[in-house]
Image (cartoon, rainbow over all chains, first blue to last red):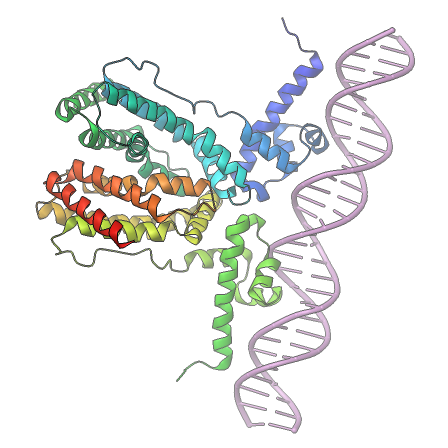
Length: 224
Length: 224
DNA sequence: CAAAAACTTAACTCACCAGTTAAGAAAAGG
DNA sequence: CCTTTTCTTAACTGGTGAGTTAAGTTTTTG
């Protein structure tokens, strides 16, 4: 049932406990403010054991940051779906809910705060996070243009506009002011407004798509 | 010619030197990573003197952050000017050039990185920086709506959209990746695209305003 | 079950840092 | 010019943190 020896299983489980503790402590205190003793304490073991797993504070920090960020790689499953508005709306919501989670914001604050001291960190994050999402968005935008539903010259700009319209305001605010839990209602306000502006500027059939958006909005409001 | 005694002048000059050194060291190392010895060294004096001016590391940090941020409060001087497109373009450029300066980005990284440890800091910054600019933008948007040049329901959303369309993409990237100096050409790309999208979505006379924008773009390109 | 191997820990080292103290230098006032 | 006051500094203190060591414990293996 299990290939791993008891030792190996223990080791893996502890490694995960350490990484979990590290993310918590680093996010709370920043790299210089975090203490290896505190991380060890929160992981439920002692410092020399911690050094068995990671050879230095920096190594731990980098390993923690390199750990895959689940939930980031969301994409458009059904590219053939003709209801572009519904797809955009669904994408916007799932992305917003990922990115605005408190732990995710903490991590973003940490990355930004340490970007100067760890230049690779920020670059890698940008490449493996936002840039991936952007690529997915660009592919989607181009598919919609080919299907005659969107009109634009530069797919990258269109994708970035979509992102910026939907998330930049609430996210910037949340980065500056922690513990402001962002309500679903306020996210809805940004998402629907952003999408409306996006469709007005980019849709091949703006009136039709805006009507579709309003219908979707009513449907969702009724759900809650 | 000068009301201040030699002592008082020296004191002020030193205080400024300390604040300059502090901003540099804190931005480079973060709050916990910055050392008072290093700040004293960079300010060209010794630690006890530093403590004569600021009673603790926290006090220095907060004083430094409270120092007025010049260049942030830009606004629309000539509200009566009928050329809305030119005004938006000028605002976009002056704001972008302020916000994308390396020192300004360093400060933003520091604020975001320490927001969790200093909750007031992030709140105060948001209130005295971005929110002020936003208020100015909102007032402008409303004036343009009253003049029949823009169409929207929610002035705050319109203002935030403008901001997000123009700056969110390059700024987020710059926050993650320091020392990427952002060329005027790439800023121009974002600004002109953002403004185009904004006008398509919000202008009362989109075709006319877009033509105006293109003319302004050509004029500026010719200048360089 | 006993010996070896791997793992874990309490206690330590060394460096650094925030904040203080005591003694010396400079300015102000008579 | 000399005394007083203020400013400045080199040297110190107490505490903490990264990383190590040596001794004890658990797991594996014959």
